[in-house]
Length: 119
Image (cartoon, rainbow, N blue to C red; front, side, top):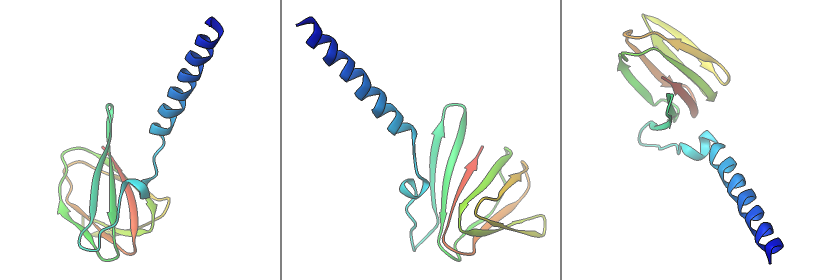
């Protein structure tokens, strides 16, 4: 009986460990659903920083705004124009951009795109 109890306990521990690993892995396209009506924004948080997922259909934009904290914008797939200080930065899959605090900027989807924003 003790052997059966040990096997059940071990099986439960392994099952819990596998479940925890699955919860740690995410795919941006599963978390962010593109919407033909508007851009998609979802906070994908961690206690030590804020991870935000962004989704743009072609032509959608994140209007001009200012953020009080510096951030990093990462293009996971697609391409966008990042406009800041009168200059357009063309960003494509794999590119990232360091956004300084307190500088007005906007993002325009040039094609269906998925991005990460880290603050």
